[in-house]
Image (cartoon, rainbow, N blue to C red):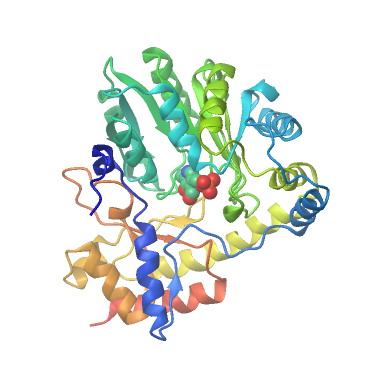
Amino acid sequence: MAKFAERMKRLGTETAFAVSAEAARYAEKGNKVYPFHLGDMNIKTPENIIAATKKAMDGGKTGYCSNYGIPELRKLLAEDINRSHGTAYETENVVIEPGGKPVILKSLLALMNPGDEVLYPNPGYPIYESQIEFHGGKALPYTFVEGEKGFKLDTEAMEKLITPRTRFLIFNNLQNPTGAESSHEELEMIAEIVRKHGFWVLSDEAYFDIRYEGKSESIVSFPGMEERSIILYTFSKKFAMTGWRLGAAVGPRGIVDAIAKINVNDESCSNHFVQYGAIEGLTGDQAGPREIVRVLKERREAGFEILNSIEGIRCYKPAGTFYFFPNVTKAMERLRCGDYAKFRKDALARTGVSFCTRLHFGRPIPGEKEKYIRLAYSGIDVDQIREGLTKFKEFVERE
Ligand code: PLP
C-alpha cells in the first residue's frame, strides 16, 4: 500500500460523484433512475459552437497555444464581462483555464499562504473547503439563513469571522446549492466589508448567465472591487459545455500572470481548438444560450410545483442556477428518519429519485437543525422530472 503524502489527508472531494456512482449501480440492476444528483447537463452544446470547433481542428489549431489562452478569446471575454459588469478589463486581465474549477485552486495557490484564513460559503460548492485545507489554509464557513422568499447570506455572522489573518472571501452569488442571490444592497454591504478589511475576493460567477428573470449583478462591479477580485468565469453552464473544460480567471494583471505561470507548470495551456468554439459562443448567434435557459426554466416550473405540493417540504423558486434546495425537515420527521444518508438511500431504492443532501456541500455547521436536500434539474428532462417527483411525493406522503 502506497504511503501517501501528508497533504492527501486534507484533500476533500465532490461527494456528489459518489452519489452518481451509487445511482449508476442501481440502474445497472435494471432499475429506473431519475438523476437529480449531478449538476451536469443533458442539453447539447449549440451547433454553431460545435461547427466552429470542428473548423478550428480542421484548420490545424491542434498544437499548443499560449499558456494565457488565445488573445482573440481573451479580448472578447474581457469585452463581454465589461458589458455586463461595467468593468474596464483588457486582454491582459484574462487567462483562459481548462474549466472554471481550476480558478479556485490557482487563485489560492497564487495568494494564500499556509495558515491564512479564507471565508467560504457553507453549504457551498465542496471544492472550496477541500482546496483551502489542501493548501494549508484555514477554512472558515459563513452560511445562509432561510427567509420568507429564499436564502439570505448571514452578513453579520460573516463579519464576525474576520481577523487580521483573513486573506480571501470566496463568494458565489447565484449560489450552488441554495440558489441564493444577494440584493444590490447586500452586495454593497459585502463590498464595504471587503474594502474595510482589505482582503481578496474570489467571485465564483459560474451561474451568472443562468437566470430566468431579473438581471445578475456582480460584487466586482462595486467601487474598489475590480482591483481586489478574481472572477471565476466558465463556458460550462451558459453554453452547455461542461465536458469541453473551458473557463477563465479574470482579474488584476499581476494575478493573471501568476495564474498563467501555474498553467505552464501544470497543463501548459487549455485545449487550443475549443477556444475557437468559445469565440463563436461569445460572438455568434445567441439562440443556443437562450434555448438552454428556456429549457431549464420549463424544468424549474415543473419541479417547483411538485416539490412544493409535497407535505413536509418547503422549496423556493430560484431566479438563477439550476438547483432546488428544499427544506425537508418535516418530511424526514414524518418518515421518522433522522439520518440524511438513510433518507437519500431509501428514496433511491423506493422511487429511483437520486439527489444530494446538505452533507454533500461542506461540513455541517455546529447547531444546524434544519434539513435540506439538493435537486439539480440540468440533467433530467421535464417529463422525467414530473414522473420522478410524483413518485417522490408518494414516498414522502405514504402513511
Ligand atoms: N463553481 C460552482 C459554484 C459550480 O457549481 C461549478 C460546477 O458545478 C463550478 C464552479 C465549476 O464548473 P466548471 O469547472 O465546469 O467550469
